[in-house]
Length: 475
Ligand code: ADP
Ligand code: MG
Image (spheres, rainbow, N blue to C red):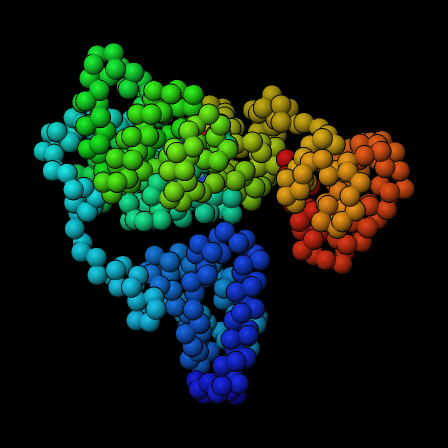
């Protein structure tokens, strides 16, 4: 058989190139453009040896990352598209166009991070301790990379954080701007970066602070006419992390000072990590020049958790606590408490505390008892508004299209999905639903319900998508 010879005739090479293009296209479709471009695009098909496909990436980091996160999927796709392929080997490219990056990656001297990051004189340990004590909010020992559960919604942010922890102040990753809603893991990731950096080089000065603390310190310095010291202290750190930047908004003086500190540190080749509740472009009340600088490195968002991620987090936390929690209890929590991970943890802790207190094993009844009010608070009814908003968001169309008369498929299909979900998830009648969708006739709603039902039967991917939306709305 041709694939066992290890030789590639031109026509075979052409065939495998086409199959490889297909694999890439599939991956791109599955992971989305942004992620594909950041991590997967640089894969090169180097050849095939027997049943093993040889794929190269320009750096060790990329190779490890792709292997860890996409290894299984990549292999499955290659096996599906390329008969005869059983294994996929990921390597760092040697030579060729990518040599520049690859060489830099391996040839970099193993100098202490502090040295690499700091052109400034290294402070004595006592100075370092004093400065750190001053600036570092205590790091929470629970918040490390090891305890961070990775899922689709946070995969990208996590990978960026890892990258920064491994190779701080590298072009393209500085500043690292993490954003997302409350309780999705921003602070956890920042602490994890700080822990990882300090573990590798204890002399490294990592200043982690909330934006509020930054502001407080600055105002204090102004009052005691100590701004020079404030500035030089700040500028002597190797890594500056400012959490919840949104609290700096509108505070002009402080923002100005932050801007200068920011520039000074970036120019000196130090790493900056910022978190906020919104993307730089959506933060209102900050100056354009700061906005531009904030987006100048990598911007990574933590998406709302999915049911799967919530379940994985609960599973990890229960295991950590060393308590046997029946899957049904974890499922109940993951389904009902869909807001943020902090609340999810709180609920689990309450159950665990109950179990300890009463010396009883965790059961579904006991959990429902322990959580009574929490569960009821989350037992919300789904409204047509919720459905329209969620569906519009999901398909990236304007909310107003739900009621518009436009019939182009890009808006008509999502509109039909929303009507379908309105029928499934609310007790509204067809005419009532029609009314909420731009005064449409009840037969239009009926048609939408039938159409979507049929499409879901024909197209498993579409069905999965609608089911996901439904789950998100119900949770
Ligand atoms: P944020 O800063 O985004 O508001 P936090 O980082 O404070 O959120 O996270 C809230 C709580 O949820 C923390 O206790 C954190 O450890 C936990 N948490 C969030 N995401 C994860 C995750 N992916 N894996 C494990 N724990 C998580
Ligand atoms: Mg936080």
